[in-house]
Structure formats: structure tokens, C-alpha cells
Length: 255
Image 1 (cartoon, rainbow, N blue to C red):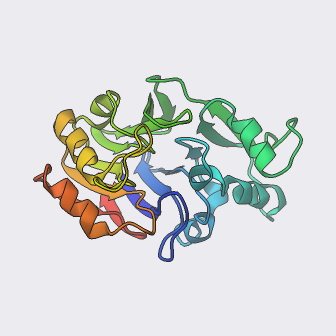
Image 2 (cartoon, rainbow, N blue to C red):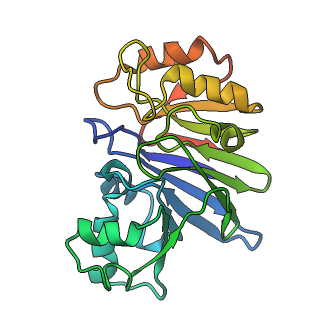
């Protein structure tokens, strides 16, 4: 399994990165490569096309329905509807309750049919796995103001954990346990951001990785353009002694 950072800017697209989007690729036993994205935030659809034709994705997996995690699904819908090479089947899209209605509103479509002629929407249920080709994806409800899921992606015994947007919560332990790579929200900075129940800081992300146990690499992501990455890293390093870095567009990780 391999994950490529397409976009990692938090809350808004930044000067060097679109908002959240991570391309996950994994082979099945027959040698076919399956490709899914974790989130498709604003600005991500353009650079995603450097890696593949987005209409050939096997699934879109949305952690939640804030614009910086889902809004470029509107552009993908346009590609599927008007592009010259129609898919034989609808593209699966998994997300929180009400994803189909939310995306229809975002593109000013009537709720019925909305985008459902081209997209096949499914709703996450907390801790209930979904199988997509060789990938098993387990959503775990995390601590954010709207219905939000961290996504635990497993392939041949290896684990990629993506926290989505969250503050500290009990779900982070089963989400991150024994993960080869943890993509952790680090939008907040201790000493600056005091509101609770929204985002992790570098320190709290590191604490979650330590508490989960078995994490091999911690990657801080979802940093808004006004964050100093070195400050987030310093706060994490005070807790975490293992491999640590800030996500950057184009970075790839073998899981």
C-alpha cells in the first residue's frame, strides 16, 4: 500500500498546497491496482490529475463534509457527467450521513437525483468496516463539531491511519494502534489555540500516537497557511521520539 499526499493544507487551500486529499494505492492478489482518495477538499482535483485520471478512481472516502475535505467532489461530478469517457459503473463515495444531499446542495442540484446517476453514495457507520477491493476501511467517529470519522485503512496486515479533523478522543487509540503511518490533524498550536473539540495540536497528535502504541511514523498534516510547521514539529517532538515530519504535497509513503 502506498499513500501520496495530494493536498494537506488545513481549513483553506494554501499557497503551496490544496486542501485535504490523500491518494491510496494497493494491489490485489490478481495484480490489479486499486486507487482511492481519502477526502477531496477544495483545490485538490487539479493536482490529483498529475497522478491519475480521477474518473478511474475506485472510491472516494470522505471523513466529513466541511468544504476543505469534500468540495472538489463537485468538480469530479462534472468530469464524470460531461467527460468523453463515461464509466461503466457509478463511482462509490463513502461519507457521513447526508453526503448525497450535501453535495447536491453544493452544486445547486435538486436532491433527486442530485449526483446519484454518477456517484454511488454510502454512509459510514461507526466502527463498521467497508471492503474496497483489497482494502479494509474502518471508520471511527472522532471529536469534531460535525459528524466526522477517522479512517483506518488496512492491507495485507499493514495499517494507514488518517485522523481526519479531530481533537483528542478515545477513538484515536483503536484508529492509530500499530499503524505504519499516521496522518494526524495538527491544525492547532498549543499556547495559541484554546478552543476544544475541533483540532489536535502537534503535541496532542503525538500523545495520541504514543497512547495507541505500535505507531511507526507520525506525519503532521492539515496545517493552515498561518501555522509555522517548525513550531508544530517542536511541540510533537516533546512527546514523540519516533520518525516525524510535516506532510507536503507530492510526498509518498510506503505502508
